[in-house]
Image (tube, rainbow, N blue to C red):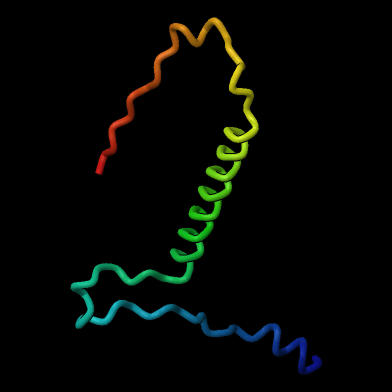
Length: 81
């Protein structure tokens, strides 16, 4: 067996992320890399959606009118926080 094949067969140790130190427990959960990646992805997705909506609003025709607009009502959303 060659050295490279043997090197690939050997069980490697899993690299784990550190836990939050007890002295810093008052700051809440320690954000891990995977949490950061997920948060950043959500943020950029939201940014893209908002930008797309802004573009649609900028290019819309202000003279556009549909009869359904007379009776349409906006849905009231309450923030849960």
